[in-house]
Length: 351
Image (tube, rainbow, N blue to C red; front, side):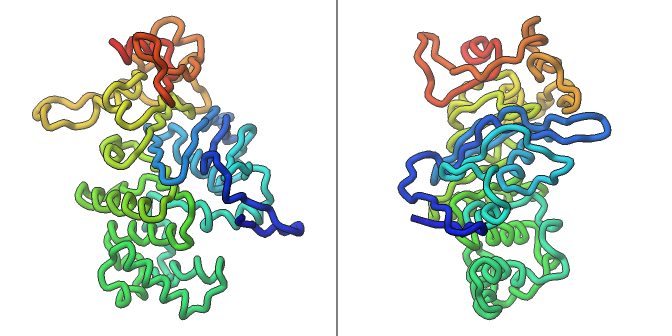
C-alpha cells in the first residue's frame, strides 16, 4: 500500500491492488469567465488511461485538449477558470476534492507534465542541472551534491551527450530537441505513474520529432507509465498511441483504437483531419483543408458544434447535440471502446 501524507492528520491510502484505470476523467467541465462572456472550454469530457497505455488526444487549437490536461494537473488559473462539474480520479480517488497539499504531493511524484514550449517552461537564469535537481531536493530532501548527481543520471537517461560536462549549462545553450529532452527528464525524475505530454514536438524538425517520440515510447515501456499525448498532428501519434480521443469545441467527438481511427473514421471531423495529412501518393496536389474556423467558445453553435463546417450536416445537426454513440458494424456487432458523437456516423463509417 502506498500512502500520501494528509496535512489534516493521518494518511490517505492509495491501494496498490486497485484494479481500475490509472486515471479516469468523468464528465469534466471547465469554463472561463471573460469580458465577452463565459467560455466553455471543456464540455463533458470522459476518458481513461491505464498503466502502460498511451492515449492520444487530438484536435485543433482551442478544442480543449490542453485545458483538460491543466485541470488534471491542478494548474488552471482559478479565477478566471472554474471547474463547475466533473471528476478526475487517480487510482480511484477524485483529485478535485483533495486538499491542496495532497494534490501537490501527487503532482510530479505520481502525475507529471511535459510542456510544449521548453524554452519558456525552463527558468533561463538557472542551470538545467539545478532545475532537474530541484525535484529531488524538494520532494526527497536530497543534498545539493546528491541532487546534482541524479540530474546527471537523468540527462544521461534521455541521451543528452556529455551530461556531466553540460549539467551546469543554461537552457539557451541547448538546441530545441535537447531542451525537450530536459523537459522529459524533469517529468521522469520521480518516476511517475502517468505523464501528460502537451505538444512535445512542437517547433521541432521532423527528424528530431521522431527522436523525441521514440525516446518517450522507450521510457514508457521501461517504466510502464500511462501516457497522455496531446497533439494536433495525427502523423505524430500513428506509431505510438494505443487509442485516440478526438476533441472539438470542448467535447470528445470520436474515440477508438489508433488503428480503427486511421482505417475507418466514424466522424466527419476526424475524416477531415486525416484527409489533411500530406501524403506521398498525392504529390503535387493541393492539401485538403476543413472549411471555416473552430467556434468562439463563448458562442458555441446550437446542436453539433461542428455542423457549420461539416459537409454532411443536415437539419438535425443544427438543433440537436449528438450523444457519443456506440459504433457498430453493419450487422450490429458493437465495436469495443468505439464511439462517435455524430448523428450520421453510420454514413461516415460505412459510406
